[in-house]
Length: 233
Image (cartoon, rainbow, N blue to C red; front, side, top):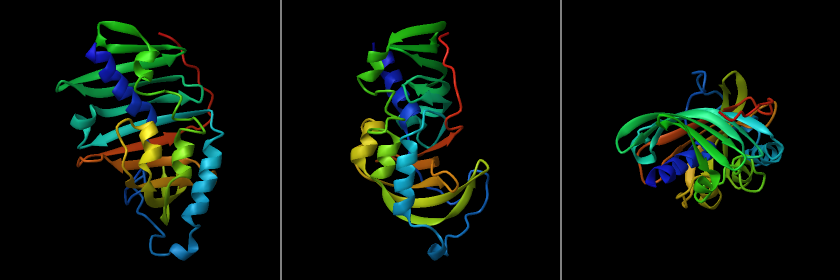
């Protein structure tokens, strides 16, 4: 039964990773304002506003990419949608026992549906994954991204465009106590950068170094509150 638990660990990363650090925007735009911090809003205020706004989010689309960390994390890429009620749907490229796997997954009710482990869809009890990760965590106001942002601190470095959205880039400290709820096994503080929207203070991009490793994980969020329908395969 190791495979379901390995998948549960991957699911925890798919649905919960959030934090960041880079010098260019998602569209490849150079950072601006980095040397003019006096004209930028303070990070503390931006983070408070983001925490409040994120607590109201009902749905979001995410995309995850790893660099130099696929082997240690067991995942190279993923994308999908998630709801505040804990439903999710998406795909992932993972590594298991050194072999690449292409997976599709659906979380609905108390069941995790997976395609790619064997020939066709499998149904697993969500409790298998919940023992390691609760899929409602990402958009939970008390445990999810809103909680992580509210407990983070940093400095506003500049403005960048992330997938066409103007954002403020904040470099700071993400506390392990909050991050550990989202990323099982992480207990130490991480230095990273968060990209918070200028017009609506939502987290649009995040990236963090994997503790104890040389790799990084980058997460992009988009399509906040766009209605989604999660269908069971």
